[in-house]
Image 1 (cartoon, rainbow, N blue to C red):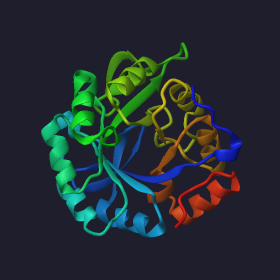
Image 2 (cartoon, rainbow, N blue to C red):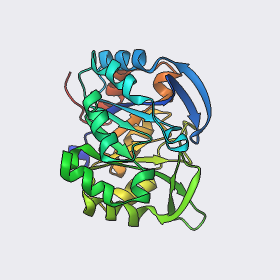
Image 3 (cartoon, rainbow, N blue to C red):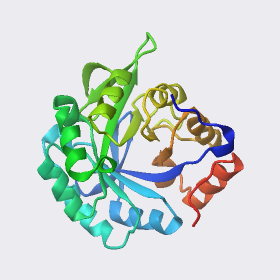
Length: 259
């Protein structure tokens, strides 16, 4: 079990860009999609502001068995020089290779790993565990447990989140992108209890995603064990920026990358 103290809290601040086709979109509970704009333009803006990383997720790729992210990543990588993670519709080693060649640094995989857990091992062995991010879409049940969902939160799996992340770590996942379906797009805060449960059961870094709305949310997530925080609506819709987010982090004694 990891033990994070108030003295050494730190976090990477990440822009999450959900896309459909060639458009940046907004979603609530990973549904109700609304077009916002050109994802490459937003990525460039966040890079200029000092984002530590970018995460592109194609929300419909798994549903339609395809992804349009390769061209978006190529365009972004020409002018953005921070790590880029890409997820959505990644189903094979060949898909991973194509995305890395396009300019991605890491891949985030959910649905295909649930269907074939050995894909985690294959990716981590060929490209390194740092490249293999397990994307987890978690939904809370009335009994207090969390279940893994796939296909953009449309398909239940019957798999317990804690059991799954422990297995994935053994197979070689180097990081976990943890999205709370219940909190995603609501601006009601990250699911700190979920973060705490996952971070207490694995040693790999946790990226908290889904729900940021106010300053205290950042502190609660990092205190619960998040190593990185993904932001979406607060950037895309509410026009906050990474300078403000860094100031908030520092006000809670959360260390961030020096710009």
